[in-house]
Amino acid sequence: MQTCLYLQKSYMYRSLIRPLLFLLPPEKIHDLIVSTVKIVFKIPGLARLLSSVYRYRKAKGLEIMGLYFPSRVGLAAGFDKNALFYKEFSVFGFGFIEIGTVTPKPQFGNPKPRSFRLPKDKALINRMGFNNLGVDDAVTRLKDRPANLIIGGNIGKNTLTPNKDAINDYEYCFEKLYNYVDYFVVNVSCPNISNLSELQDQYMLEGILSRLIQLRALKSTQKPVLLKISPDLNYKQVDETLKIIEKTRIDGIVATNTSIQRNNLVTDQEKVRKIGNGGLSGRPISERSTEMIRYIRKKAGKELPIIGVGGIMTEGDAMEKISAGADLIQVYTGFIYEGPVLIKRILRKMEEEGRNVLEF
Image (cartoon, rainbow, N blue to C red; front, side, top):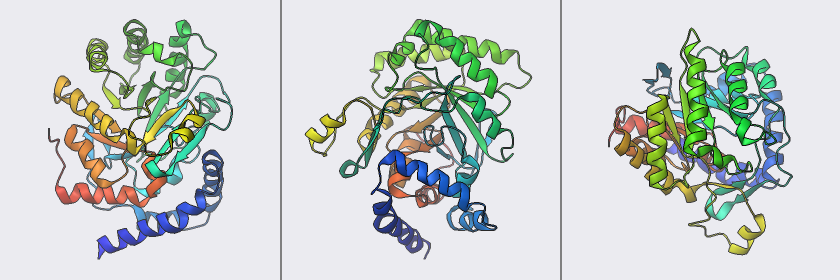
């Protein structure tokens, strides 16, 4: 009976709601959804109703990095850049929500259009460019956050900040957010900021991470710091990154960000060429992301916390990430293509298969 209900909800979203949403450009519909959600959720009782429909009550939490995650499925960074609707979206059953990427100063990002759908591939290409209202603006909305929701803060540098001064931007965001988020993700792997990938160089990356850990040591509460890596790294680069993680003693890794590669696409190549640069997300990067997780788990052992993200479009994709070694997972593009019922389907599959411990 429950399976039938899940299928009906999924069918309704894919056949009725998604086609309507996809009539508008991706960024425009995103802004419209945010505005609508903020208004509609003011209706008394609506949040409770949606929670009863979408939240999976049997979800098993996980304690890791000194935090208790109510469920192992989170919303990836990029969806709620400015901490505008994390409270409303928590009703869909997310165990944690990552806001950002935030930068010290507000910035518009890259010129529009900068977000594109590839429906045949169940994928997106974006070159947003860390568009956000600035970390101070995000803090104003995080001050009254719910106590039972884990919030991650994804931090980056302003586009105009030279790489040699990038450490100052990460430090600024870290200090500003420290009292308002539960963990941090250092984003040096987004392909949409000019020369940002240079920060993945050993020397620069080690400098940023070491500085954040030094700052954390001065705090009364030690909050986890994780690094988000690119799926386009080769395994030698991954090995070097793991050495830096071990040396700086940060707490974990997020694998992976979007990709500059255009592999495994069925969309017409001319259409893809016209779209141009940007990070690819969704189904085409699912396999690569899982390979990275499996490799990292094998190299780093059981102790390093891994958040798996990249191409989770079905509950099967989620289980592959868990089986490869991910402790937690995040969705983004799958949430757009499959709707909020995807979270419930994933959590139900986890409960059915009894995947409450890691399997490698």
